[in-house]
Image (cartoon, helix red, strand yellow):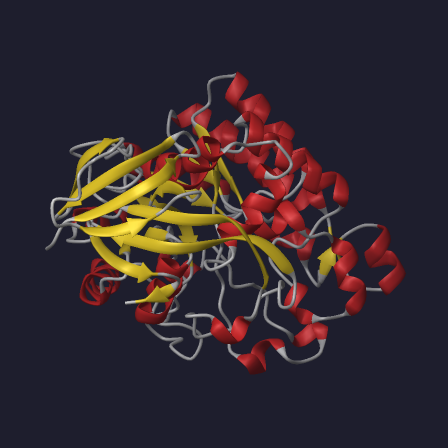
Length: 428
């Protein structure tokens, strides 16, 4: 593999530096580095980040290849600046055995646009009644460390306690989809003023908050780790903040769409805005931004949820829940967090690379941009502004809430262990 010299990039938004890649690793970082025959990437004015890591991606394969495949999903990830993604278990068949997680892991290795780490199901078939093969999935070639029934809540407290106890033995983590099912029966959107005016079934904030409160207490009791998926309410923020103040080992994520969009958009009845958990109020959005800035919320995770056209282009009540997000996540974070002054680019690197890699134990990812480290890198043109055009997405699905919306920033290059997967905004 030839050498690559990234010239004049603002590493983590700091002073311009040169970064020399030799093979799979960073050879040197400094100013005025000679090219010595290396391929030169002129990066003046652009920001260089460690490759992004997404702890919450739905790749749909096996079973729903009409929505996404490991190939198309990892191409979308590379387009968005990601070098590693964690693939959720709600596939068909469910990733609740060593055999299925190994299949997903090997598909990721074969396609090579980013690393794919499978997430194992907590319960058999995501049914919430019996623990899945947690130990076998951990000991498999996939080396699973994160377990989740995402899409469904582990609502049985005894099952959740047993899962927390089990993964503690090997340092794993349970990622909870916090949704009390009895409180959300028939729910269509956030419960509040807008739902009342539209006559749509309300999804109360307490359905999320009650599960988070229970699970942080269970984690404290067991002495284990719990991670909260797609936290979406101001009340949830306060519960996590309280839990951390007690020393409970809890981490939490927020999605880009919950940092930007509100339930007011549901007035259009456009199913592209239908998502789980639902879009909340402006008050919730502002609380989530502040919590991400102060570290109460640890990371940004996309919850990339692709669906085929026919599952979203229908009446609201029948539409599937979810949005694609890998290719727009960094732009949304730039708009909501960087351009508002809540985070600098070093903070973005922490929330979108360093910390998700640490939580998920993604080896070789979320590492400093320094000599001797793996060359997993993302180059961003932060001065760019443009309208989102889903026709150009690498994802197989197009269910984005941002179509036609102007967003800042564009990933121009992505390198996975020194190999360019994206060059000048085009996949290799």
